[in-house]
Image (cartoon, rainbow, N blue to C red; front, side):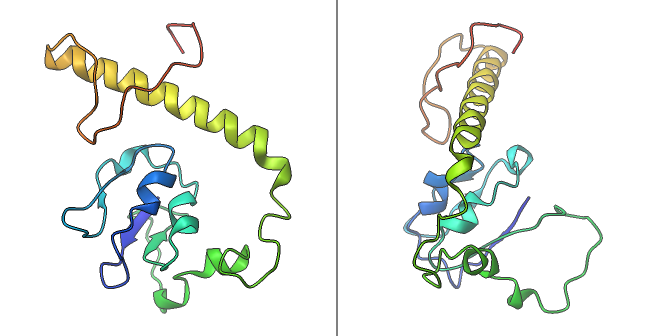
Length: 150
C-alpha cells in the first residue's frame, strides 16, 4: 500500500496522480504534494512510485501497520525505480515488461469498472441521483462489462 509522500522531495508534478489506476491520490493544492485520499483502494501496483521522477513516494508491500520496522528506510526510497531501470540505469527499462501488456490492460479495465460502480453507489447514497465527476474531478469510468453484478 502507498505508505508515504515525501513532501521535501515532491515537486507537485502530479505524475503519480495520473499514473494511479485506482484513483488513490488527489492532486495537491498550490503545487503541493498529492494527497493520499483513498488508501483503501490502493492495489500496491507501484505505478505511482515508478512514475515519480523525484523518488518522493514510498509504497510498502506489507501495507500500513504490518508490524515491520525499517532500520534505514531512506535506503528503500527510489530502489524500485532503480531495480527496474526507470532511473536511466539501463538503456531498455521496459525489456522485461512486454508480456505484461494484456494483463495490465485487463487490470485497468477492472479498476475502472470498480471505480464506476463505487461512484454510482456513492451518488445514489448521497441522494443526488445524478452521475458526474467525483470529488477528485474524475469523470465516471465506462463499465467494461454488461453484467450488473460485476
